[in-house]
Length: 138
Image 1 (cartoon, rainbow, N blue to C red):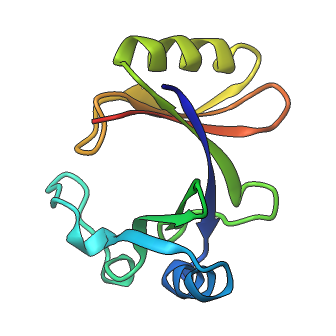
Image 2 (image 1 turned 90 degrees about the vertical axis):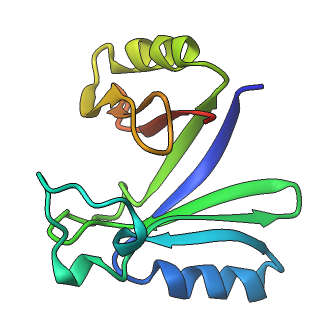
């Protein structure tokens, strides 16, 4: 079943936000991973200041899942791009269909590709300026 999830992008304070929402919204925390815990890529060495930033966190508020992460150091963090919508597709084919449709008249931020967490993941800003992260359940 395809799901739309709110995705909050923070600027170095995602761990604090997870703790805040856990208390304020009685959220359940399902995981917090830092950039330093991700598999190393020798082609893109990880700067020291990125290691403790959150690469991905998942919380649940009531029946709703919400994801959070920090920006990668040097990536601009502006109001308007710090809240995105993540589309969790059932298959790679469905992810590609969403990706192709949303990029029409829009802008690709990250091409659809296989990652260590998803068989198909990409980021598109649609023609209305809404940022969508398209992912496939692993």
